[in-house]
Image (cartoon, rainbow, N blue to C red; front, side, top):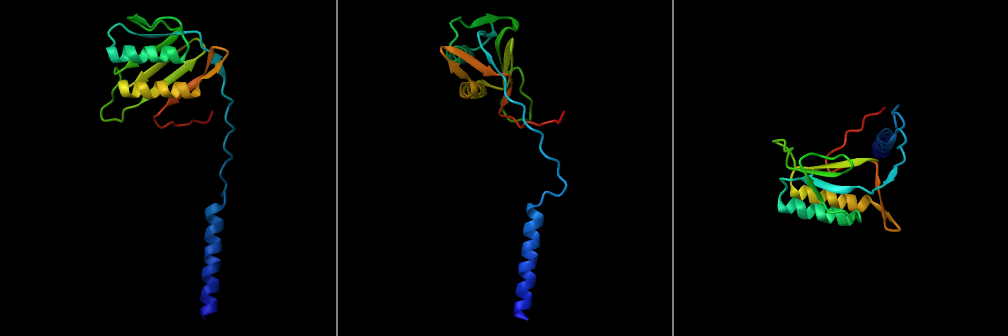
Amino acid sequence: MRIAKWGVSALCLCVLTFVGNADLGAEEPSPKKPVQFTQWPWGVAIPKSSSPDVEAAASRLAKTLKNRINVLKTETNPGCCIWLDVGSWRPNPSEPGYLVIVQVGGAIVLASDVKQLDAAIRAIEKVRRVEKDKVFLPVGVLTNYTVVDVDE
């Protein structure tokens, strides 16, 4: 009787292991698109009303990008730059975070606060490529928020 119970238990364990590891009709994940990098000659721009902390962060980002142009202070996003937008978007309730969108002709960093701006700059530093004093950035989105991937 003991052997029979042991056999049934082992059979149940094998079935559970198989079912738990089986891919029951799930679709194959779609292959990821290769990441495109673009040379980054553009400067860093911030709103004229930016705090000294944002100005300091903008200067650090300009150094990260090996940019020789001073940080531009302007009323509106000039487009061909990395525009830093800090604090204009603070949903409540929410978690603080950042969103970086990079395109060939410009980028935007949207951060809920200066701490998140610093996190975004560190992320940019990690993903950039430097080749012979030229900086290349990946075209796409960087964020510390949850990304919802929608199949095309």
